[in-house]
Length: 326
Image 1 (cartoon, rainbow, N blue to C red):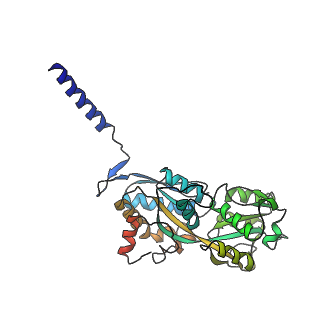
Image 2: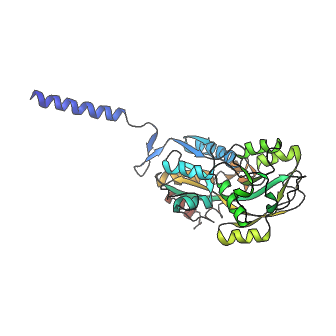
Image 3: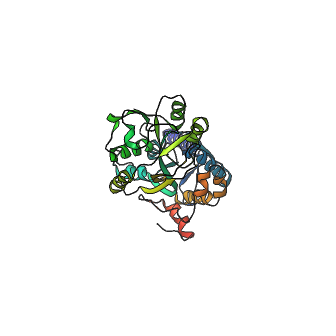
């Protein structure tokens, strides 16, 4: 009897300890699943578009969902897919092409990454080959032997840089590549340490604008042949133009291509939570537009265009209610 009593007390002790040690960072959803009370949004460098928009989204989520939300500086698209798959972040910005590579284990990803679902696409991310206004570089072929920033290591920007160089018959063997973030590239540009930089971003890009104010810049047209080869091999590219006057020093339109910025989420989050998250963002687009001009381009009608990966059921539920289908 004494032993039985001791076992009963021990069992009760274990139950009490288990109850006390339950995680305080989650709350039960209407579906009985655990929802986070703190959300981290993976963005990009401080000089890009993802970071200010991520900060705007964090403010919206804190206000509408009564949670803690943080915009995290990262190496952008590729790193964000890795962070999201590992569960280190709950929401992330990326390019639609990089999301496709991650889910399918192609291009920059050697194996498929699990746990990634889409919320929506956001706006075109235009590929810009930027040079100084007085540079002797007038085409992508002129990059031979030049010092060129291709983006942060492993970023979507770097992936696009390689694709464009390849379409022009070039590679890293033909240039002096420099792998840096937008902000670091801008510093190098102003110091004369690089001759050109690739930027996959909304227009205007803050780092390019910063350079333009001090020395003026031009965005180089990629050329019809390069664009044709790119689109033939990578169908997700769309035609785009960087209008003249987008930056100080740019006096002509530049023909180029673009991918689409996308918002992705960890697949393990409940349908109810992602529904509320999606609703909060899309019903406060005016607020996002006040954070960056690209936020003004995000629309409900185009939310599911250009997505090739599965949409999270919570986002799908919201868009279905609004009459939007993939």
